[in-house]
Image 1 (cartoon, rainbow, N blue to C red):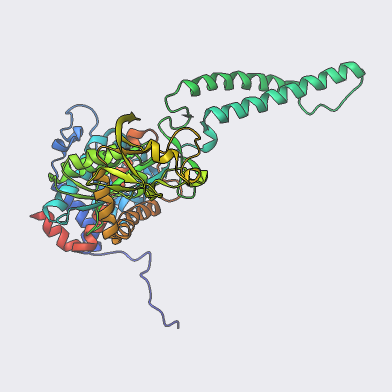
Image 2 (cartoon, rainbow, N blue to C red):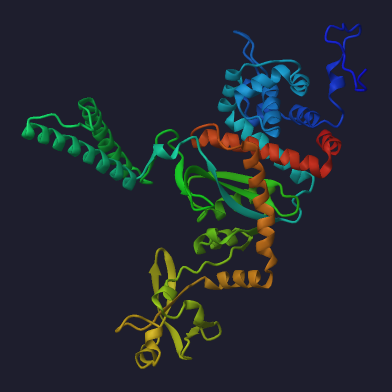
Length: 476
């Protein structure tokens, strides 16, 4: 006789029916989902089907579908078909949905048709975290990460890529025609590498590519994605080029909760104020501190953010090409704030001569014509034989200098940023799997991201407070 734990016979009848509530423990995360959704005013949040019509076939209540999606994203089940399957076999979902089993089409349509409500639910949970004093430190790290879209790289076209395909097709057509001429001249059979039907296809393909070329050149971004028109070809972390979306997020440095997120189709540059201002509105607080990496460095963007009352810490980038030219870098010219002049490597003073405007920036120009003309190390300072070396300084550069001084005095700020904002991105991408987004177009992708952020914040709060502690906070 085997000395193992014995299971119950499958044919054994149960005299006293089992209650499904007995299968879900009191500290099960599914109870947090149930309580959180039940405490929401779904009609006020934008779910239009709360008040159902009296005619026609009855539908599912939005709370039921919302609970299903939050559970799915919390447990790495984002597909509507997989959620349908889980509702038939998952005991936790049977408890949560009260044994309801919506089909995959109904599940998918709910996510597609209730984007406004889902986004508001995500914001509502952030508001709950604010009420629980999770953001008292008011220090937030901002960063962007590329998430793959439902668009293969082969279905994305840029002017150079279209031209490459046009040249390739034209060469194939020319090759076929030259083979035809050779056959006619020799009046004997030759091996044809391209069939006549293939030639017809190539000519049709050339017409399609010419039309596509006109569309690409007319597009504002000079690129077209055929599967997901809103997705863009971008460089990722390993300098690979993929069709994706750039997801911006602001994460608090104390508890690593995502306060705000935005879906963008450009690089990080110029996105700082967009995200930081939304953090201020969410928390209803002006005095916050923002940390970001050098990809966000933009003088006008940083000034706009600081004018809104926040403290910004973004390391300055050195885009000067002086080192490649073999001349002195701008950093070797020391600025004297009291006298408002620069001191060059040769020790000469470059006073302020005039103002100028470059790319929308108002600049002060510093130059010393006489000292530069007779300088012994002029060849190390400028490549021009006639023009002296000029230094240009933004009229609000003192703001940038003060910011850089804060970063120099606190080198741990850069480490804090990495420890804060990289973790949520990695966690969410792991939950998503290899495919990342399942839906197309920016509007639908933002709905998906809101569900991921809601699930991440929910799980983070359960880690911080415990499931029973969080339920008690929601109940209050």
